[in-house]
Image 1 (spheres, helix red, strand yellow):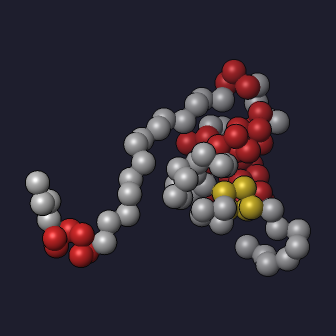
Image 2 (cartoon, rainbow, N blue to C red; image 1 turned 60 degrees about the horizontal axis):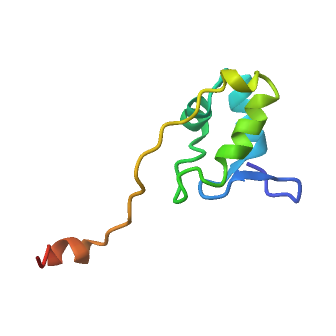
Length: 91
């Protein structure tokens, strides 16, 4: 990754750049999950809420939209500190 004014971040949470996503597509990623596996875009705190549409748009430039497989969703996970675990469940 280069630190210049031309760098465009697609996934801010994981700091994945446009160039990294484009490279993943050139390397054979044909789905959002394929880009995610190659770059970790969409694996940050927002779970892809910010970057999913951008990545879909980049894929749509190479494939018909109906061929782009939608990603699967998992419930969000909250960060837990060690002290919270040590305290246990009060109920």
